[in-house]
Length: 294
Ligand SMILES: Cc1cc2nc3c(=O)[nH]c(=O)nc-3n(C[C@H](O)[C@H](O)[C@H](O)COP(=O)(O)OP(=O)(O)OC[C@H]3O[C@@H](n4cnc5c(N)ncnc54)[C@H](O)[C@@H]3O)c2cc1C
Image 1: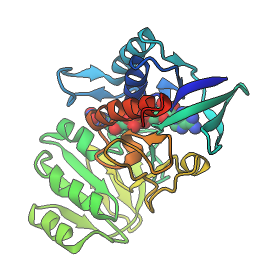
Image 2: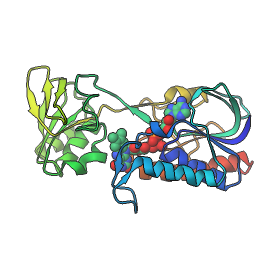
Image 3: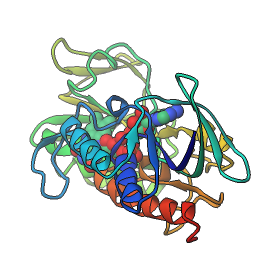
């Protein structure tokens, strides 16, 4: 099936891209599942003009807006992708093949996990993968940041502005020394042993380390960096950075003619506001490309 623009990803970035591309009178299909978006099932309280809003509500409303201008949502993942030199071939789960003149890659990232007991069971009940997203809920409460690199150090220092007590668990520290010093100066307690388990019944109660230390806490923030849908990007001809993000230009172009990217996959900050802004630009650029205007 021939389409002008294929959007891969059904989160805030992809939906906004679909909206802007379809408003430019191009045929647009959107691949992926709304339920798999990082913001589905989370509450958003830092997006312009929305107050405290369920992520799922924003996504569903966005889908209705994009559908009203002609975008078609398939509700299926891409299982095979290739750049043809004259567009892109994409196959979805039911075997249907699409040929798109332009593609917007908006596949987000998947957070790296610790893989310890309690992590999965208590996700959303005190276990989080995004300190900057959830810090506001920890005002006057205890928080532990887990991770070895600079993002973890920065998150720990930031958390001291919210939590009554902030700890940082780092066992193979590679964070910039100046950031470690800043965290220490802000009053962060640093522990040097690897996490072993997260305990609690209905909510997180403590993080237990391999050396036997138990740190009582209300929240455990796992900040281990991120892995993006790098394989898909490579299939389409783009080479991801070492951290699996994609470098983009101001028009969200990736360097591969006709391939644009937006949202979490282009790097931090992992925030809906950034995803939506980039989606607007990527959708517009992809539509212009498909119409031969670029
Ligand atoms: C617990 C939590 C709380 C958060 N809280 C906030 C907050 O309060 N405020 C804020 O601004 N941000 C918050 N975030 C971050 C926010 O969710 C992300 O920045 C945002 O969702 C990124 O949008 P995106 O469209 O780039 O990616 P996502 O929303 O993750 O969407 C990715 C899409 O790609 C699709 N996809 C992946 N692989 C394929 C494939 N092979 N084929 C087709 N589709 C594919 C998925 O189905 C999904 O639809 C939070 C994140 C988490 C995890």
